[in-house]
Image (tube, rainbow, N blue to C red; front, side, top):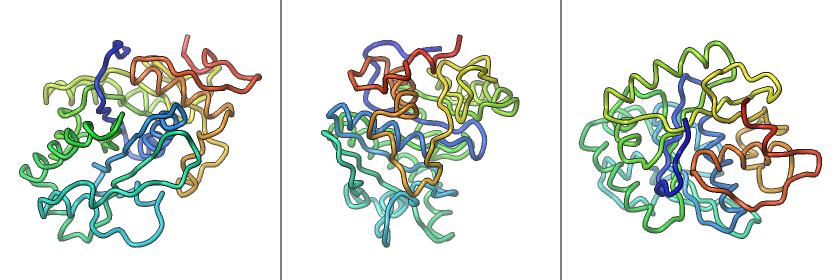
Length: 251
């Protein structure tokens, strides 16, 4: 599976199972494009886990669930991360009490989310949407609004089993997986046969420290290979002398 050249600006980064690491990779993907001088946005569609909130400090008001429940502009819930790169990384996290969390999952709110994501692609060079395992309205809205879908699975038998299951689920909503990313992988022995690209465990595993793929490092090189696979085009970023992007392409 691979994304063809010319894929659009909205990329759904879908967790095949809980804890696959799609939130972290969404942020690292955005930072990698920002290293290339582009402006990237990460939108949280994982309303239940709300992991994207972990990369920002302070109170989140409004958050993305408020945007969809109160029909407000996405820009009100968007904040820029302080990363020293040529481009920019912005995030629109979810952080909501249970009552608003429940209201944010309606079909009407899902429609608004899709509209906000589409509008954001006019303002950013790329929009990455952090999507939980597809089983709720906002997740369906995210994958159907995307120009390409990257499926993130742990590099394990559990992750491998999730690939056909997720492909079937996406087919049910007229979407498809364009790239499979094996996360926290050993590039020399990738355990997910369907993987198009593998990303190792970051040397800085704490999500609150993300993004870390802002300087040349083996992890950044692997993330770059994943981004190139997902967006369907090459980047021109410095890589550490000890690493090659081909080290992170299965096969």
